[in-house]
Length: 258
Image (cartoon, rainbow, N blue to C red; front, top):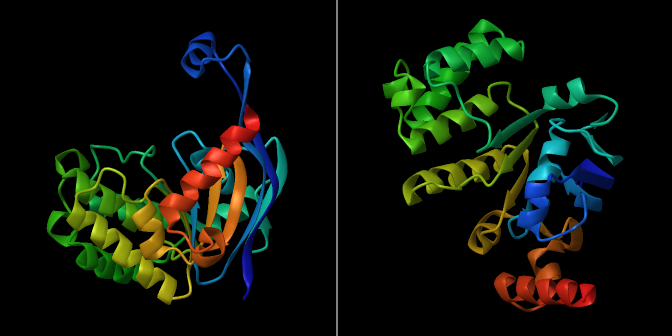
């Protein structure tokens, strides 16, 4: 298998405010969000980062997407370093997170064209890709409706489409089905499978066990910013179901901290 992503010793620490210290129930002014993370992903696979809220999944994906810089370590995506070649990385990835919101004032048509221009997609390709993607997700009927007037599910589908305007080789999704109704969630997960069949690599984070079982070729379990298990479901689960295995790993990690 061809390695398309290599993460080596990725670490990130944040300074906590007094309010955050109170919420975290700690006197420490520093929080280690990601702790020496190392893993690989291969071309044409779906790799899942599984962990509870606050485990460091979103921070990891934000570093891979060059939104924040790691304190130490590096990640190489399709031959480009997030630390040394952030612009080249951005050209090769599509990134979708619920934290990034589309402007309410604009329409799907305008946003698709705008982001296509940012990625230097030629006009003919843009038109063809927009027609295909809009029809695929049912956005064509709402192409001139302002984002503010779209349903939550339609906004999520539009965000997905816009993140793929430049046909990236690596797709990074933070909680891709979070907050979606079952029909929209199914549409999104089915499309992720289609992308995999086209040879795209998908990196996603989730805390949903069933999503990992349905989608992921391999999974990395993150707890307290550390990778505690990584491999195929069979390798990670060791004869158990993913939920039971996760809680076993969680107890092992938390027990070792006491």
